[in-house]
Length: 280
Ligand code: GLU
Image 1 (cartoon, protein in one colour):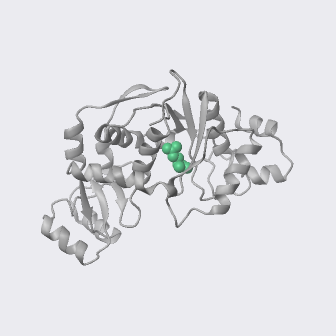
Image 2 (image 1 turned 30 degrees about the horizontal axis):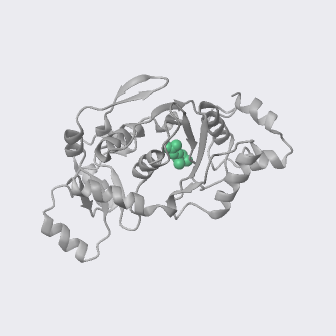
């Protein structure tokens, strides 16, 4: 574990290299940089299907253009699968994970047939089809090489962790209610992690003391707080910042090509122009 000088605020920017950075990212990166004394860069590249090396390189160029310097080595999640596996093993030892063999279609059909289908921040909650599988049934399916995901038994996990709090710099003390996500997927057969697990483990290992990110990830923090408790990880403070919107009132997205930092740079815009556009 990293030992930080006392009271030093460590922040990070953690983009996924699945597209070019846009003005919304510039806001987020500069927000993180300004909020701390030490600023770290992490590339969240676990999704092999969507992440590309050229976008990874573009992140570095764009941040340099914004005048942002990060401290230490860049951490690329794809190079740290062993760390996530260790955490998965810990949760397995606690008896909190179960393999889920359901296809999307099966889950959808079950939800459609259910008399009530609770929804969470990511859509309908997993209806628990595989939660009750016996050990021998699980083993048989695994031996048959059926693809599976590992889900967290949310009820059991929350009972073990007890009541949890986290601090948001804007909203104050928050009671964690990760149950809004139901039995979240924490790993897939070929990728021993999910966004929730990787981000929580990394923030701990990188010594991050203040997590700054957009309000769209506010709800995810409930799950992250639970994982911290279960895995014995540090609990940073959080600041979920506003999401920058374009003139049309819509959020910037990777698919909007016109306001990528690269296109602005190519048009001859300067850092000062960007700062005016994001009003930071
Ligand atoms: N990688 C995430 C994204 O690009 C951000 C993760 C986080 O800040 O926790 O949206």
